[in-house]
Image (tube, rainbow, N blue to C red; front, side, top):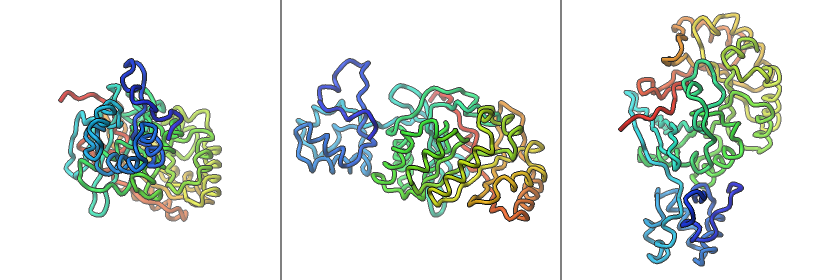
Length: 358
């Protein structure tokens, strides 16, 4: 549970609207058990509440039919912490983009990515993003606030319910920089693992790189995958593409990544968006190979997904294959990820929190 405790008195839900009542979503079975006991209910109702929140998708305590009607009436105003679907679009490949409206009216994006063997959810961790990457739509819209643990977990439950299929993988690659919201992201990881039932090795946290935060994540000794958005093989080019990278030299970032491998025993994935004529030349591949050599890592190349605000171009397949060839010759583990959801503006780098009228 976060630092804010669960509301301990039912009457707190009926206080002034300016007072924020923390939602129940995100709480463990032990925390929910303690809460129901504070309300004068037997301990077993905590497990019932946990099941209804995480496995039956209840959005209001008033709808939990196993609870006494009199108590349901008293706790009806206690927020579970579920969003509403403001807009939903489906790409030809089956990828679904959701605009979810939060309790304060803010809009956040989530993407459900189905495949033959799995259902992956790309979750946001902030409303907007402060990193201002030049090629990314999310950064063009500015930054509003961090998402709470409940708001992160809610995205996974929303996609799971909409697809009527169990979510197998979660990637923290949506709107926002996860490691600028470290406490809530770590809490959400633990909740998704322990309460929703998704294995930690099926969770991926993506970061541009915030000084000392990768180390902080490593010290949690989680088994998640760390994906670092590198996007350039040297500091000068990285600063042009990611202005926020200026105070954090690439050498320092890579040293912190090596520490992550030493502490966790987990390899690091380096995300690298290929921009035609900008960072996709053979010499860039050689520089990249030199940077990532010497510790457990994997390079994930992502051909650029276009947005309206800038005129970067996606390299053609020959350029992509040439880049891959150079990395392989340098004994670098590499793969190419062709993003899904392009038609719905749901692919990597395309997310933005535009409010679409429905």
